[in-house]
Amino acid sequence: MNENSKKIKKVITSDGRVRVELVPMPLGDNPWRTRQEYIDEQKRDSQRFYITIGTMIVTLLGVIATAWTAIVTIKGAQRQIVSAEANALDWPNLLMGAMIGASLGYILVRTLDWVRRVRLEDKGFISQKVNFGKLYKLKFKLNGDFDPGVCCCEINVNGHKSFAKWDEAPNPLKGDNLDVFVPEMVPATYYQKLFLRREYCIPILIENDGVIEVFNGWWFGKKYRYYSLPSLADKDTITVVISGNNFNWQKKVLVQDIKSKSKQME
Image 1: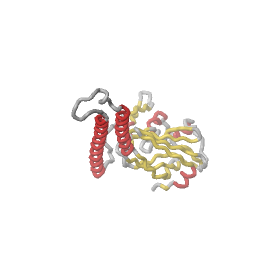
Image 2: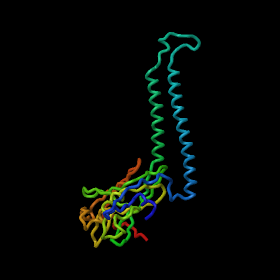
Image 3: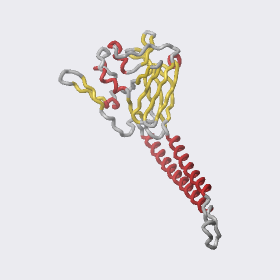
Image 4: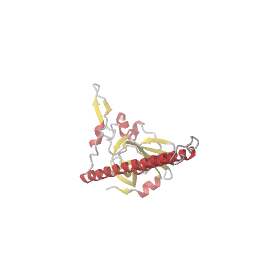
């Protein structure tokens, strides 16, 4: 069990039952971050600072341009006071300048958000044989400027939706015994805090005796009828949706493509 699994706290009650409590994850730095990644992060912080200053300068220039537009639209003589009618503002031009300045500021802010957004680098599927079958996992890496925080992965196929079980989450079993399913632990497998520039593998499908099924935490309770999803055919289309804080990514893929294009995990 790694550091990420500390969000799960198991308590043995007086009657011998297992009660699972979710403990909030710490919001600290990425524990896998190396010194070089720390240096790179400092450089990105410096770049973000200068980009922010540049955005403020351009926005200020937009305000100045708007004010200048208002000034140059005032009609009158250069050396004497003229009538109020001569000093009337050209409201259409004034409003146009204000709209251009506001639009420019909005575009700059949205462009900056787009550049700094979380981006998922899809590395395809891999397969791994385990003691309870063969897993097909989606491999990916996150890039950007901000961690997406706690994320979930939804699997949609043939009208059925379920949350995937993250690799970092412990199996919902007592003592990792396949014969002792603990349903109270399943919700804890739905969520995982993700960090930038670290590779992740999340199981999507499982194969046993030629039968393909969606893999999630409830699959471990299949013989107790906790799992009710139907088996899949090669032509079925799976939609994988990974979402987090200001982050949403999805991919559609055929079951046969997952099987044929998966690389064997060493």
